[in-house]
Length: 270
Image (cartoon, rainbow, N blue to C red):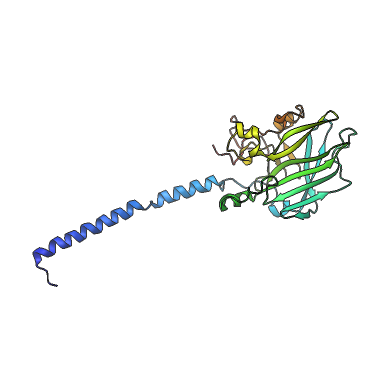
């Protein structure tokens, strides 16, 4: 087809304008590289990849450390780890201890036949906890959960102890009892639930995860767990008081918890 010069100029101009409008629309409809980078940085921060690794042991070393504990006359526990072997109990669950394991030698507070349980990639009180999106599940793999069972003069004990962050060495509470049985003057915690599902937490700290609360202690290079002073004092309260078990979410801290001082969780979402 042959175009005259007068007809050709408007056509060329129309094509030029259309091309520029298309380029402008394309640029507006796609996010800039800067906005993509900002979104990615926010996502990574939200998943706590900016938290430094401070644990004195690697995940593989933790696999070869078994839990030990001692309960003194005032019901204040001490925890430490020593080299040993966990026995596979079931999917993602290992056990140690046995018939001769005693954690409290006092006559009326004796706890014997103690078994310790360790869970990896499994929340022992919430089977759906590791069924979240992949990024969250990958983050949760840094935690393992501990529990112990034992016998006293009359009742059996089944206590959900703490979660250990193998990446930072920090210790968190992850479960709470919903009731107490009174036996021989002692209050025995019963019917444990995940911390997030406890009525007190749902009422006072809605939507908070266990790892957002202030850590109760931290792992040391000698294998002992350093419990912070505030949780030791809290343990001295009346044993039927649920506050004994409730972790803090204290806004006064200026720094995250460390070997030197208590503090807020590095995973707290402001």
